[in-house]
Image (tube, rainbow, N blue to C red; front, side):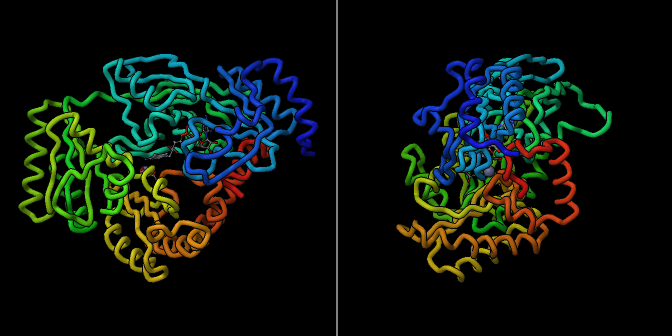
Amino acid sequence: MQSTPAANIVALESLAASFSGRLLTDPADTAPFLTDWMGKWRGKALAVAQPDTTEDAAIIVRWCAAHQVPIVTQGGNTGMVGGGIPDADGRALLLSTRRMRRVRAVDPINNTLTVDAGVTLLEVQQAASAAGRLFPLSLSAEGSCTIGGNLATNAGGVQVLRYGNARELCLGLEVVTADGKVWDGLRGLRKDNTGYDLRDLFIGSEGTLGVITAATLKMVPQPAARMTAMAAVESPHAALRLLALAQQRLSATLTGFELMNDFCMSLAVKHFPACRKPLDTPAPWHVLLESSDPTSEEHARDSFERLMEEAMEQGLLLDAAVAASMAQSESLWHIRHCVGEAQTREGDSIKHDISVPISAIGDFIVATNAALEQASPGIRMVVFGHLGDGNLHYNVAPAEGGSGPAFRALQPLFNGIVYAAITRVNGSISAEHGIGQLKRDKLALYKSPVELELMMRLKTAFDPDNLMNPGRVLP
Ligand code: FAD
Ligand code: MLT
Ligand code: ZN
């Protein structure tokens, strides 16, 4: 039987005794945890609990299990699919990992570091850098998102084509299970074939199987030099030909290959004064590409400039700006990192985080843009993302000044067109942001009955009382 919120408010006193000052119930204190950064979802919670340690987190989960209180884990609250925001019924307890901030160990010989779940991605990168290594997961929200959230969503970002998603960068996890036990799987091993891989089940489970409290992560050597360019191209097809050439010439040193349409560039420039258009040549599409060279600055510059010359000779580029300094490289990346937030500042946008075979992207964009524009003339396409991974943020914005309920009511129409096009090329409806509450009801439409049944059985095995982030990912 589920307890009523009233009974749990009384029971909460027992928890408050151990968590003085770290169990928030005042609406002024809990408000920032109960809505997402885009303002799309609003929830309520019995309380927001802030553990400092794994043992604290285990006490909270055991209390929730004893009182049958749902538990929503939240890290940096930068998620895109409403997975870390509780329902509006106020039954759940929100467990925030933001105070779990210890870097536990750094081992430069094993190339690993072990950190608490609430350490931000930026702090993880900084800890690796202090040890003379690189932690290569990188995304625009890295100053706010936590490593626990990155693993819970199997985050991607801007260097996946070289280093992989969060999953590929994690060797071990520590997790509080749904009944409040602590599983210590913090092994820094590259090889460990000892049965089912629990780590890989928790990664990407969006808080529905357990609370990730710490992780052992892989570090890699730091590059000797980086080269960055913004290239203007005629079409996504030209961008794909540039990608193939860059992979051929730069091989594993190609670490970034991001695409954006002209509207994305204009949005970044309009909403962020520090963003300046890097090229005067008008172009419908831009590619931000980067190499990370292990040898030397000279070698990096030589091979990169040869690539750009060859691309120009082959007619793949309309123009290009190659960064001559770290500051110039950062300002090119700044444009890319501002696109996500710029579209939020512009107004409504109906988002699709899609994955398609790289070879299918050009035709996909042409055909799907045309279908959407025919369905709703005047819309503005916000198309950007990680072309090197076949992952596009394929978003639809209304005509200027057209935000509001009438536009938002078009979501099922747009989703239907985009997801049908994805199905035709055997793509995915969520490349890197996860399912959360945004796409939960779509999952049943795009997964096979066998996949769904196995996922349901796993959920029941790990969380028989359905208390871990219920109603997220699975119906
Ligand atoms: P939250 O938003 O707090 O939570 C996300 C989900 O994980 C929720 O379901 C939550 O319940 C669960 N969760 C969080 N912590 C834990 C834990 N310790 N244990 C168990 N479950 C947990 N994502 C990408 O993949 N690639 C990108 O390039 C990218 N770019 C972004 C750019 C911007 C500007 C923004 C705002 C977001 C971007 N995101 C991107 C989305 C987001 O940053 C990632 O999903 C990130 O991994 C979420 O981390 P978080 O700590 O903020 O998690
Ligand atoms: C990004 O790559 O910038 C994010 O994943 C997408 C977004 O903010 O929409
Ligand atoms: Zn992205």
